[in-house]
Length: 574
Image 1 (spheres, rainbow, N blue to C red):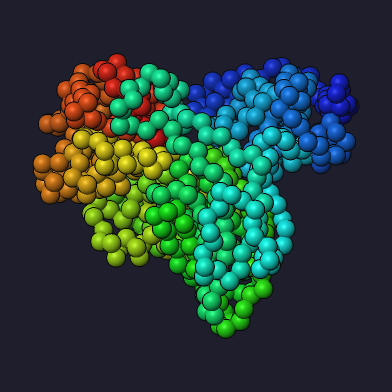
Image 2: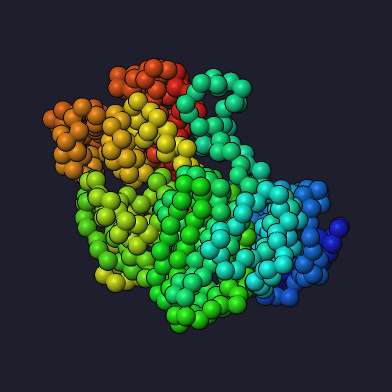
């Protein structure tokens, strides 16, 4: 790249001198992604060429080092700019002028762990590839706990020295000793996009609503075998765990089990000592024990060890801090719900189970489109209650997605063109709607109030069905532009007839046709006061909001103004 010079500044920081050009200015086109007009010579391809030019962009001579938060904080200015993303530290000094969102936006993460800031804006972006030439090393206190010992059977003469452990299952033929992290992450209250979580001191002790999930100890695991089967046992110590909280991904003899435990995830990742049969069974007990049962390919053969651990094994971190991980699935069905909205059914591979907990979302991308992914909340097969048999058969095997097609979108036109059996990549679940919130919304509440704009309807479908199944009242206020934009309008009417004493659905149109008899306009205080009951300790309300960010922020603000506590509201991020 002509005219580029690299030198090392203070503290070993690489300074890249580039030709002087006029400063970048914000894009006047009103780009919703807040891009800026970059200087000439600062395109993505220019950045790739710079990375392959031989210039040391790390400032460490290419040597990976451990970085403490205190050391990271010293590199917090233009000309010397480091930041941490998902446990890794990058020297982004040279990247500053190449950042599509502008220098000021990147400076927000200067000298700190910027993972949360990054996730809020574009979590799906493959920053590891883009910044691979800038990698300084690991953030010591944020590094996930990895260990890679070989699995060995525990000699009979030895017993784990842990006073907190209960006696192991008498049926176990082998016991594994796996070191636990010396320091487990400390839980902090989940925050919504409206404001920080309320101070627990200001919340009455009798409040039925969740504040933040209590931190549980790092799970432990074991494995057992008989002549025909192998069982992986994970002790989560969480009594609410179900098979719907357990993802299983298999690739040949590699198996990864991800348990969603409140607002955390625990990962078991191993390469098995011997091959096993296709498929598996997941069980969950009341004591928090999860079992993944695999069939041995060679019955009667005893395993001397389970196998070896792989990267990420033993990791116990906040769900929101997990890197997106994708499974390649196939499109099985597409159905038109409105003129520009499709219901898409995708099926996961036969050796994978991919359940999505209620209120969680997945990222979708096309094969080869690593830099373009969007979040979608699965909706279920439709607005009808499934039988236990249907639900069990469906769990983890299929994902139903409501997709709104944007003609100029980066992803949805490609999704709309997919033929049956085409491949699409689906990430492992993410979200903050923990089980205590599910319980509050569908069991504890007297009335569940749902306010959704457009495709913000997606997380509300499963919530509605669960609340009705528990005989809870549901008030569903749905905002759209026109009647033609309302998904499942007839089905919602039918559901309201079937549950006339429990379900009320209000449609609000911002661009109604002449003669529309319903509500019009946008979300406003007068509308909320008209339909949403006042807070009451005798008949508690739980409120959920989802839609475009401006809609969500305004709605939460209006709800606070009319007296609803933040702790009784949950905002799904659009």
